[in-house]
Length: 327
Image (cartoon, rainbow, N blue to C red; front, side, top):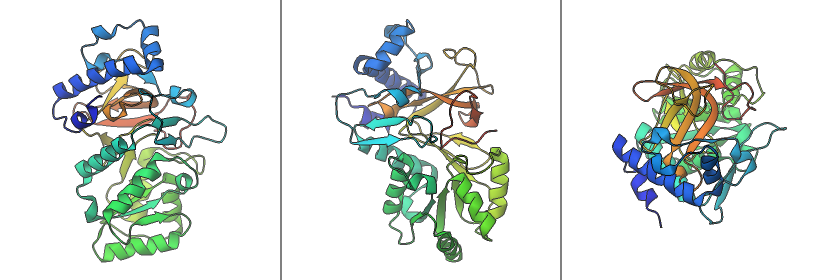
């Protein structure tokens, strides 16, 4: 039995990350038939892999057509993407949901501190109205663990939400409002809101509900509408069990068990240097029961301090509900 879970959340160096990543690569090559077939098709010998930068990244589209698992266990939960009405949703068969819980709990604490310090509010209409959202699962857990009687989900009762936000501001209670982009825009168009001490966390997802706008313009409008200095963002997807967070300007950072690499647009097997635009590859070590090495359909840029920016999506890829913003 592997011991990945205990080791992953104790990574404190690039060397340790590299060692565990290579160990998980060999594990997934052995136990994940689709991934092994993919690696063999590329004529890559696992024994030649010495660095996490050399590990092959599985195209995220395979989650639409295959069960991506690295063990024979039954899924405890199946997360599915929102996508659009005419697209095939991605499905993530999670055989140990406690790994996901440990991941998002530890990540939240790393970036924001003790969950019990916060009132967690969520305005996620497009996610609440369907089954299988990993985002709703995460925020439901954060709401419960906040142990704050004012925490909760909101769907169409937006007037009540606005009253709650102003009440928390008046009481100087720390607040995080998680919201789908179009719902946050709808809120500030309908109500006058001034909550300068709140954290507004957009989760992406215009999802055809509004004309697409660049992230900078979205954040400018939200800053003005909520009376805040910056807009925070959460970057996650159905196919991952970890998230990245931005505290402003669309610049994301990750926890120690997650890394972003940028691939060449014209040569998907080639990793390019920092400060160049390319396809976003993600190593999520908590994905050891599925696939930890994912080539996404997002475009981005990696900076020297390992922070990254999401700049859009490949034109030919279909729209994912949680990552529709183009820049």
